[in-house]
Length: 125
Image (cartoon, rainbow, N blue to C red):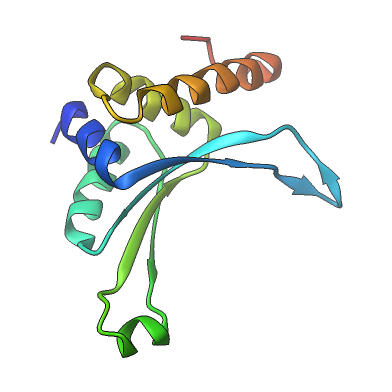
């Protein structure tokens, strides 16, 4: 497992999503998080292990809905990276190898630089 594999998988099965966290009804600045989706939990577990080895926190979840099984669909798994530092580290690792989602990730990098710099959490890229 290496960053080129993770980036290739993300190009095909991942997405950058933007969230507005709330605290007691007060909306805060929008920030990006990363999601990898697949019906094969083993590949997502392997990616999660690689990310953990690189200090990146992630959460593996499954979506087993009754209507999915009734239609003969496989169970779907997602690997999410929400933590701002972890998103930044993952984006930084994948960036040199991305093709399809390069612009999405560059936008996320710019947004994170502003958020992280303003909170003094991490040096900018």
